Image (cartoon, rainbow, N blue to C red; front, side, top):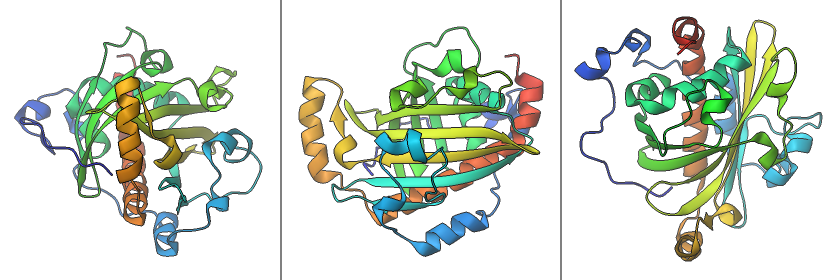
Length: 274
């Protein structure tokens, strides 16, 4: 990963100003242990890349009927990585996930609820529309400061319609039984994009299951403009993702998503109209 420099005034954890927020009672600095299937994936280590197909094939097999690797990571020959992980979310609905992605991006104290040991700061690049759920976050870019492992990363997460990654937007179907959050991942301090993510959430008995996928580095590195294209050429030479990077991302997602699920139903019940 490309490590970012800390910004003065930004910090991990809650302080007095954070504790004064109406939603502060949902802040829990303790994380549950990683799920057994995540630990098994870490123990297994790198697997052949055919077990986790590229982003172009995701609509046909990652969320379809073909058997693929549900939890794990691969390294690609071009210096990239792919990461896959499942999260059980008891009591959570797909609509809650869409609400969360639209709600949390305007305040660091909200963002820290999600991963209290890694999330530092968040802000929208541009003011989002006065809307809720998907209409609030799709098309917007969230600028985040977070630790992935021990590296502080300042990322630019540009949320895109699922169709841009080839997915059918299941959130539009009657009943609200599924949704998928898709984004182009980039650097906030340079005009460089480095990958994609997709979080598919589908209803299951008792709640939902999230299936997260990341495709990062290698051929996914690109510039956002002419100068960025030149910077991307340099980044492709120096940004070769390692097994440690893949492990750290797997752990990060394996911590933050169950932590979110633990408080989201109660948070949504209280703040879902905001």
